[in-house]
Amino acid sequence: DGTTGLMLAAIHGYNRTAEILLNAGANIDAQDHQGQTSLILAAQFLSEGVLSLLIEKRANLHLITKSGESALDIAKAGNFSAAIELLKAAGAVA
Image 1 (tube, rainbow, N blue to C red):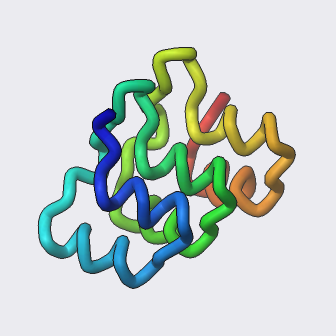
Image 2 (cartoon, rainbow, N blue to C red):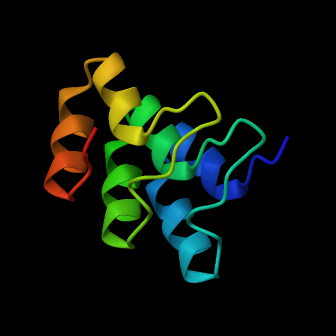
């Protein structure tokens, strides 16, 4: 289904694992079969540490899922204020 190790780290909030994967060359902007990225999943699953790391490592804030949702859209839909603040501070716009 296209899910990567980095995506799993984002879902489960495994900050150190995400950092190791990124340092080893993981594709930060890989998309699964639904168009989800690690950034989108970190926002969806409230993985603030991974979200911050992905932003710091310059994940693309503007990629969207096949249903047209960005990480910021997902955070707003769930009313996840911490994720919204992090994404907006990094330059994400809806």
